[in-house]
Image 1 (cartoon, rainbow, N blue to C red):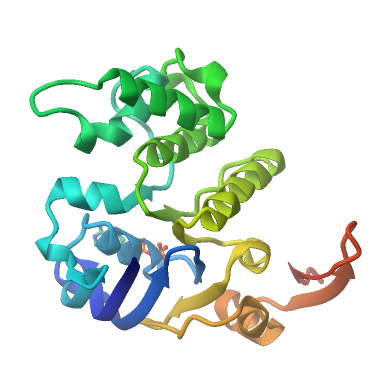
Image 2: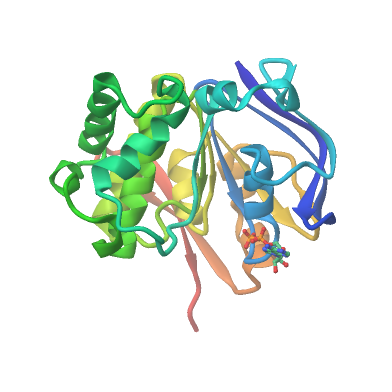
Length: 260
Ligand code: ADP
């Protein structure tokens, strides 16, 4: 199963933010999108999951036009983790997670026993089981982000589309989320993640694409893309990329902005 974008234009209110975007993500692939604020990462992700209509071009999943999939079928294919937002209603956390499975609920009824089981399993996966009975409105931004990830996992879709999922998390939770995503990818899920952390792209992604000036660069190997020159062009500050050796003796690259 492959998710393919073909010459896609996307944006808000019929004004294109990105044009001529072509790329594909397969099962077992982890693709990261990097780009400055306002470059159109969210517009692209929202178009991928059907929140925004494509302004031009095509999205296909498994060779079938995305527009031809029903809402239920779409939910079995792609789950979305938005940036954590202020919630409107004081839902119980377990209910929020179970909402990830609305497309699987029997018509005219609520969650079944297997939906509750899947919701609890998703909370276990992100180690948030102790939050099940809490009110979503009473969680910190980082805790909400973990619950939104659990909601997407409960959906059991083949592709996960994530918009800066670790931006409000502490280091421990950042690593836990990235490890969970890597595990899902090795189990055959496809992941597309917008991130502001070149480090995370280097550690997790099979391919990285850069969003800027209304275009998406071809997705390529992280070590090829994440050079000081490219990072400086994205963020307009000097960057260092240093080679280090990990605890396991394996080499890895570290990207850091250079503070003078
Ligand atoms: P990113 O995720 O890379 O920060 P966005 O997709 O959020 O980029 O924004 C791309 C551009 O679209 C920005 O110029 C932003 O101001 C604009 N934009 C964002 N949301 C809306 C909206 N709801 N309506 C119109 N323009 C928007």
